[in-house]
Amino acid sequence: MGSFDSTKRSLYDILTDVDKGKIQLPDFQRSWVWDDDRIKGIIVSVAKSFPIGAIMLLETGNDGIKFKAKPVEGVKNANGVEPEMLILDGQQRITSLYKAIVTNEVVDTRNSQGFEIRRWYYIDMKKALDPNTDLEDAVFSINEKKIITENIGRTVVLDLSTEEKEYENLMYPVSKIDEYSEWRKGFNKFWKYDPEKMELWDKFEEKIIHNFNTYQIPLIIMKKDNPKEAVCQVFEKVNTGGISLTAFELLTATYAADGFDLKADWENIKKKFKEHKVLELTSNTDFIQALTLYSTFKKRLEKSDAPPVSAKRKDILDLSLDDYKKYRDDIAGGFIKASKILVENHIYTARDLPYTTQLIPMAAILAHLGNKIEYMGNKNKLMRWFWCVVFGELYGSAPETRYALDMIQVTDWIDNNGEEPQTIYDANFSPSRLHTLRTRKSAAYKGIYALLMDDNIKDWLSAARIDFSTYFSESIDIHHIFPEAWCRRNNIPRDDYDCIINKTPLSSRTNRIVSGDAPSKYLQRLKKHAGVSDEEFINILDSHLVNIEFLYRDDFYGFFNDRKERLLQKIEKAMGKKIPRTSQPFEEVESNYFDNGEDEEEIFYNPELF
Image (cartoon, rainbow, N blue to C red; front, side):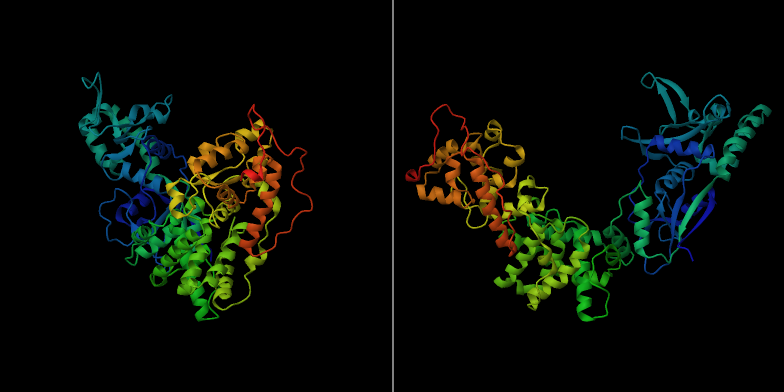
């Protein structure tokens, strides 16, 4: 048996089922949004018997896909009615035709500028029958009062406020198409059965009304035995005019059928996350994916023949409400623990988080480990895995398979002293990658930024340790060591001076004093402002993995190659792995210093001064 049927039904039958509540919307569908021009356009298409596209419906009755349903906008008497079909694609078209034809009420819509307006829809009978006039010019909308005026309301151009005035002006209301026989009786009676007007009506009925009454819409009906995964995938592929349906939205509709408001529950969880800046970008989908990973892991621990550990879409859609409630608090706690551990490792905001996606398995791992993560050895293992993901850049795309692998192997490694995870084995970092890390778009760039704030790193001006407090109070950000302006003056290639090797965390005040001067110049100003001893000043720069000697010589490439090596050693320590070096240094230069931008004598580093 196929997963869907293709058929046709009359527009009138479809709108009748909508009115009775037999056809409704799944609760995850967004509100109706079509504007005035598009409504007129679809009325014209039906009047011309032009195709308006297929409508996709889903049969109800599958206990595994119990969506909360809602009537189509404008339907009055369908509350409490169990639908037979749900609209997956075609909501905007069906709702527009239903509101314009069936409701007999003014339509709330928008104009081309997006302003809210209220409109009735009409067909100019004479224009509709004129072979020299396009039908598009015959279909029009009019305001709520059904009166068109000029001269600031002083001159009435068209008045359709009563049926008699509709008859008189030969303007047929679209809202009467489904009740055309009643309108026809009034029309003929108004014109006292004038043969000319009756002939006009007959022609209009034949050319226009007939097309509405006989209009057939292609239907694709998904059978009720389709799995949720198929419904979700189909909806995303075909519903280009609706919301992008996430697994969370689909679960929301599923849980709503059992009286549980998943969105409201997520809002409560977000309130708990609010004080943790690292979690600012954590989405509802991230949360539900972590919970699914944890749930499948727990089931696998209980039964070896349970389905594999996974957090793919199919598994998320299969997450039962009972399992959600059972593990929700554990996972929320796991995300909060992850945030605190990352802050300890100098990742203070979501902006600085290398991979938002890494929080998914990390939260699940921490939910399982519980208080065991408080042991230093366990926490060190967790962070070694973390840095291997970051510097191996292993969560860049489609990481769901690795989520499951890490969930199993990292917990076993920490909890049972098992073998090192595959992720640690797979992680490799090439020294040349340092030359290409220039922006926060790279996970490894953010990782190095965090590592640089380790080991009691201090700001060059305030001499204050850069920690959670000073990170925000001092507006810490990553800045160039050899300033951009100086590098451009001395023809240093942008690829060199703009990479992470030439950057370090500094306060905004420090960066202003650095300005665009040569290091030999700005260092003297900084030391004077800082008011620290020579030894202290050397130690401050050394905490940034900077050799002060190269800065006082304005020796960019001496500094560059030295700092590159120091950064590699820092990364090696974090990953717990040796990074193979190339045999040749990055760049050889003849000169050990560059123009410092001053007319006076060059200033060189003198060990006796510091």
